[in-house]
Amino acid sequence: MQTESTLLTLSDWRQAYLRGARAADLLSARASRLASDSPARAWILRLSAQSVAQRAAELDALMPAGADEEARRAVLVRLPLFGVPFAVKDNIDVAGLPTTAACPEHQKVPAECATVVQRLLEAGAVLIGKTNLDQFATGLVGTRSPHGGPASVFDAGRISGGSSSGSAVAVGRADVAFALGTDTAGSGRVPAGFNQIVGLKPTPGRVSTAGVLPACRTLDCVSIFALTADDAAVVLQVLEGPDTRDDYSQFTPGPALLQARRGAVLGAPLRIGVPAEPKLRAQDGYDAAWDAACRQARSLGAELVALDFQVLHEVAQLLYEGPWVAERYAVLEQLLRELPQAIDPTVASVVRKAESQRAVDAFR
Image (cartoon, rainbow, N blue to C red):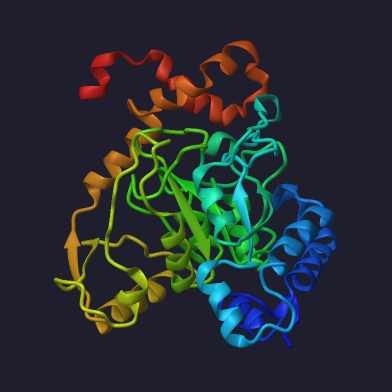
């Protein structure tokens, strides 16, 4: 039987439970390992071993000892994330746990979970803890936190990327099978790339942001970190769907991602936009990796369409230099006035740009 340290993907966890493993055994071993091994800077809060054990016992009660494989499989169909450990970025609410967004002075203890967390729990997932981030999800480096910045899983001298730094590192180290972050300007995709894992940013509105501290409310997305694209697709299928708590939520039936990966024909061939001039030209093999990725996409039948990305760079600048900064300011205005020292200086310098903006700037 596999030990918890060899369980990486959702498929690994599923197969272990199909063979008769108990959640209590696997998760207590995982919690014990993390207590002594996991880098503190990736986590802001980890649940106690007792809390994890209680959750595992609740799940084991749904999978009676001695049940045959068919009965176990039925439970796993009903609970597709049964007994799978996960983490959430600390700007996402978990009932009874503090949400700080890496600013202890901004702490609140919510009475209910964010919709995304609730859906994961209802699918059988087991929360391990809350992860570090660039304060108020403002940054792409992972270092703007009073808890320090977690390093890349490959090199302690390199940054993890941000803002969802801790979630990316927790998955990259296989502390958890998947994690939630947020992504407005790259906060999910950048740290995923820096730690060589999958970072999925869903289309805005496809996944609820109810219970997520806003950075830029009109553009915020909950992102998914996983070790494989299949795993990210499974988690997305659990999370997606309309939510009356979120005014931006949309009904999005969309294609079945797993069916697409298994060869189902879903319509027109996939067209992928790529920079007309990639401008990577960097060290450490980035160009070779880029070329290999393009070849792989073509081999799978995708059409690569060269685009001028300059307009996208200009749009991206609006998030930190243009009128969208006002959305961040609306969230932090009171804290900036009453307790400015609580805010990271770089974060404050970004958000304060809104103080000199005029309404007309939003339409330029």
